[in-house]
Length: 498
Image 1 (cartoon, rainbow, N blue to C red):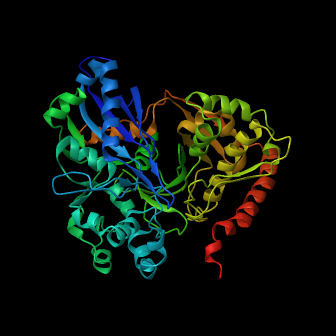
Image 2: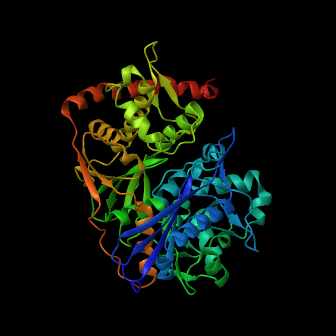
Image 3: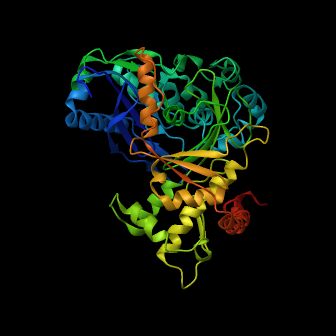
């Protein structure tokens, strides 16, 4: 790469780590780093993160990039940040965080959903095209005002996670349209805050920042941050986007009917469409492209289930253990020796939307081994994805091929299991470069006025075709999975019984 060729910095603040990468102007991922940070869990559904953990992890990741490739850092023209979403996070009038951020996984607002917001459901569905659930910021905001009024009063501006980083980088307070959509306070037809819901719930509209397009230039990097991160002065900072919206952009998906799966801590299947539509058990998300949307369903703990096994059962710190897990699971036959795993460790989002669910593993025998448990986790998360795929509207155009990306697709076994369970060919994009980081860099290009290239095709793509014989086997086990869910869900709802 020529020393005079511009580079772009993409950053993704995910559920468990920040990834940062340099991308060339022709769309090639050049170098990537990451830095982890913790989540703070609690007995009442708490899932919180510290704003300075996001910032410090981003700083470490970028500084590691700069140290490894100072010549690329000197050529950076613009930076963009994508993030996990939605998150309830506010700053006071001085820009200081008001407590920890309540991330998408947090379920403390469940009582608000059942009581306060029930009467407004039809109205919310109409303007947001999404169901009421603690996942969205609206429920968390009403919960905060009711149960922590001091935090609500002290908050001057509510920001997304990438909005917090943009504020740190530039001093500008704003929210990109993809994050605004997941607050459930945005009217999807006007792409502005819906005044009606603020009036109905007596919420303060002036606490919400301006909504802008993802590729809007939020400003230039502050001099002291440019020095801290090792970037050129006057580096342009884009408004950014949700990681789930950056990934389709990085994968080059924008045609109606394109289907994709992002496989990470949480995994989700989405289908691209041109107009908003309400599907009660799926989420409507805004594509980075102005005229595109997508319906998506996400299971809360797919890769997270393997991480749980690593941390709590094996108690390992080896990041390479997931490759070992995949090899071990391959020694177990399809059906995992009769073991079923329901991956609801943190409740479940689509299509069940039930925060009280918990993980279930059943079907043990004295012959059950570690290999069976690991395969059951891989199969159980694939079954959860099938429940989502079955929610896609029958009249919605869909590709017969699912483009898969993310860490889960480093496992050939898991990829094949998904193809067999879902009954569709999966095109696994084999790349070490994160799709959300790549998509973020493309947004940075837009902010700098540089045309975003088509995603490079030099990455390896592997096709996994469904095996009809195994599809029949997994069909039987999928029906067992559904029955197991129905039989065990009542155990987590006993307080609802008279």
